Image 1: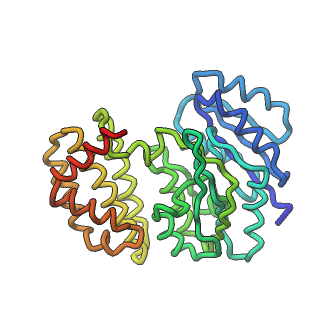
Image 2: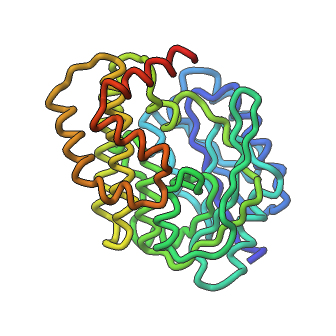
Length: 328
């Protein structure tokens, strides 16, 4: 296992300020049997020139393409990868020297391990927050439920080590037409063909959180109405995920749909968007999955209260959201 070759894929777009740090953090890995594939997705800043400084490094392959989106860039990396395993890193982020070692060593725990997961450190405004994952070995079906947990490893691509064989055998690629949560969709598709998942909550990945992450983008706040199209894209992905889920895993997937709808309704109300028909549709779906939402282990009591206020007392919820937004 220590001799296993790993392909590390970094998609890049307008990351001139962070790409050097990111690449250097990979090149200082204790585990040395890897290649690094960096794909510039048509950056308009100085990113490409920053990447060129690593062109003479034998471990590094740099590629430049026209702007097609992060999913296409990742797929380019997957297609040319030579490794037995794949790791993904985002250009804004960086990793500790033990990142690859702690991932690949998890595959020594058993022949049926098909996915390795490690912990992360979330970085925002000079605040560092460590993940608190459950370490151990899990069936892929139990992990399907766990990724919806707010404190779980979620559908991120970059805190995991994937088997190239599974990805290529089952033709699992990023869907270029999916604009929101495309990584979660990829993770679900992969897990449907996996046996066991190993988690080690060692904190080797620095996740530099920006305002463009899902949690930031869909936060309830005063904003432009652009959020409507984003939400509709997000809902479309959530529905695809629900349809993919085995029957025994649909509970948390339906709770996830309700959670998205509640945020959508709250943002519509707070920003005084009428959209009467849309709100009725969202509310109807929330009522349809009400039992699943309240039964789901990923839903806290606070979220249950928010459900009641949003669905049955929307003006109260709007007032609370308005007071919260004014404090920020």
